[in-house]
Length: 318
Image (cartoon, rainbow, N blue to C red; front, side, top):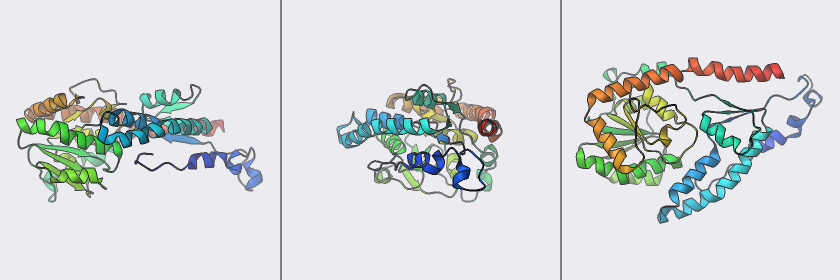
């Protein structure tokens, strides 16, 4: 459901409706299996219907993207029905943010939903050192880095919008600024950006940390999406100064511009980025604040007990 023209097969519905799964006495079907079926947990990384709704809202404003908008308009209602059915058949639904919980509850207010945020391996990101990495890329002192899987529609929209609308404004003030798009399987629309001055498209890289660490400013120009963005946690874990749309950091309790500089239109995004490029002290301060934020809230030591509690509760009730 995240790639234009491809629809999700109803595997979840097949599983929940399989006679073996629905049996009140699984033991009768498979000798040696305890009475009663296993608990069914639906871990929803993002409310898919919300993603398609936002894609429609973004693309319908541009005639060249009306075909994509039409696709999303059709998918929204399909996904609302699909997600409602999956959620209703699960014994527990897990989501990564309050926003996703609220979105799913608009489908059915009776759903049993638990919020367990995404986490990040703090030690893994802290262990990287550019000084010890002889293969570390050098994109110059004013590199603006974006990371992600580059055939994913929200990421495609983000980098194309940034390249078209934001980067020229930045380069007018800072001609040495370079936009670096890092991630595997770049879509043809992304590959086409590599032909422009001041833009690099890397494709797959062996160690994402090296590229995040190369950023003077990490940018999150997302206009479409749901759930929470792991890229935000990864960049914060590496002390990156960051400019993001509000949607880019949706789901995180971030209201303090000391951690992330927020901007939702091209002029504001460019101005915030230029301000950070010109202020190394603020970049360092923001990067340190971001690292402290993820250490306090999103390390595995904070996340795993919350996830384990969900399964312990289901096991004890079974």
